[in-house]
Length: 84
Image (tube, rainbow, N blue to C red; front, side):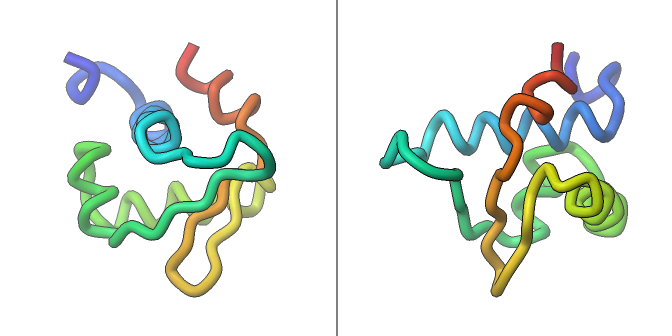
């Protein structure tokens, strides 16, 4: 149901937070994960192109950073605010 009714930004934010909840090993500092664009797009229910535009928006809003294939969540509160 979420894939059908939520906005793209909300779906991507939700996917990133789900990954954080599942794979976070250290509670200190920002969460970083290495995931392919295709896998994250599939998890978000979108195309790779749409995902990349959304991630670029999040990056310019300083919500996350992307370096060397790693996605680092910089502002978890803002990301969580998108899904509420």
